[in-house]
Image (cartoon, rainbow, N blue to C red):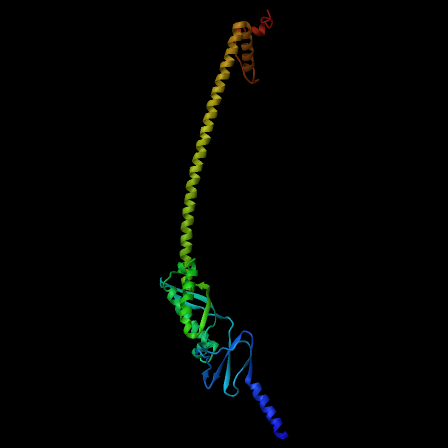
Length: 295
């Protein structure tokens, strides 16, 4: 009896160890029994949460699946716009398992590579449908957000048959093929040059207008200054004439004396000047009789 006890204890321990399994945080598992997924009473897949779980040894096989959010960084793919021009789009998708039983069956036993290959095909189909109805300008403008939202909605609906929930889809980068980029850049340069020529022409036109206005203002100011100067000189001449007239009226002899002195000053201003005059001329009367004005 004692000889059978030890093997019995070992067998019991072995069976007990085979009956338990541990699910790590971030994972969920299913039990496959006789090739079928173990179901609950309401015919739903029996999901085992993280922690210590139990199974029937030898008959049950545990399939652990990652329940965390996954990132599928899609490779760049070429699409055709409504203008029949090619664009190269780089996108990524955030997804996680929604229906573990359906996911396990549709991906060949829960193969992640198979799941992402199928999901990538659905994303490409959604992008191709949306990009094909949009122009390049619409794709790179604010409508880009609407394009991603429409593709996300379509992919979510089509990914249900994989047991996958698509959380987010984003377009990371939009490139143009080199041959298209060159033609677009050439057209953009031509458009910018046209705008630059128009601005330069408008600038020259405004410069001519400003220059003409400035010249008009200068001519107006000069004319006004000349008129003011002439008026001032006329008033000064009138004042001088009045002063001379008043002085002549008060003392004609003194006035003649002043006029003679002025004539002398103008006549003998240059030493090289030669005057041929009669010495008895009245021009020299104040030089001959310097005291005549005092009398």
